[in-house]
Image (tube, rainbow, N blue to C red; front, side, top):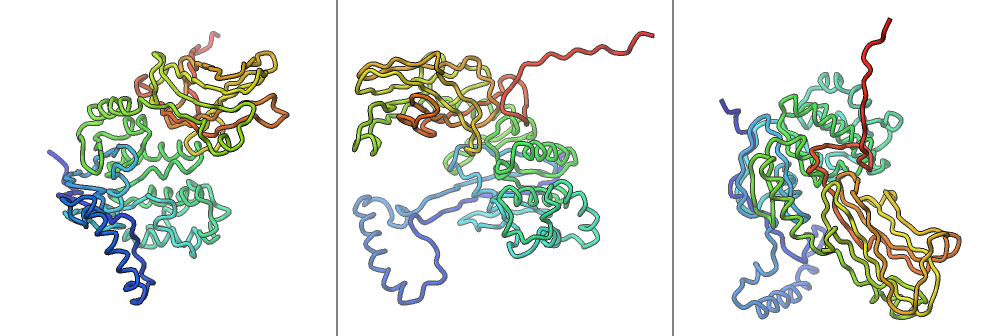
Length: 427
């Protein structure tokens, strides 16, 4: 027997006006004075596209014709590229944004963890916000007090619990918001990629808690670019593309199709850097002219599976023969630290000649954890002197380890290990 439907979405659509923002503080005089400009923009749009309605030409459908049914106890992952409409869908389900068309029916209490600070009153303390969120979920004071110690312990911000939330860092807000959402036991939990704001230890802690929530039979909607987490946590999956449902079904069926699509779309990865303003105005002795990231076959690529070779090709322009050092540093998605760096040293310098010099570096059998990374290129004499050139985050790529059948929530690298058990002891 199937469980009851708790979320029913019918012909849902959300349309935004491009280039306009609602401003409730404008007076009548300002509205009238801006009217000619608005009419001129609309007339220009009509002239450019005579067959298209003026309103439509200035609009964007973030979501269109979405039809979904989610049953009680289901854990549904929502995947898609940036701009696919994932966050917009969650905001509508959380009643933060109203739809342009269609309707949503929800049965049960909903707790949402979307943007940092959502649902938190900045003037209230962390403790007061816990009770506020509980009341919003329809809980009694005694119920909230019963969970209070667990929430505080999980969040790890005991020292700041009686400090106004407006003084919290983004990571502290996420810690408190997730602790509240996970422990106050709503029937439906909606979680966006906001979990990635926290440090890696807290991310792992959150994923572990989500596994407990899933086992508890609650309904969960989870948006993430971490495909391994989606595969590990979610039974069903919805793939959004350009505001529409591309595919939906069992996670094991949808994810391979999505990854194949990502690979096809990421056959780029080459950037020309010789036209930077500072280079054109005053050409230095040495500068990075071009950089590319490729797969083992030499094709431009921005998506790699676990164990794939990652190849960096760098072109360095020199006005004269010169000896220098080259380094490529790789940072994580939030630019918080250097994950890995490959570089020459004093015993392996590069003897560049006048003109274009091409350098290739291969990272064999990459062991990066799941996620998105940025690569920077540095060229200099040695670490004590200023760099000849430094191009930060000029390349980007993604790694997914799901092809290896493993799920990693901690650390930055996959490390091969061997376990040995010597059970018992002789007496």
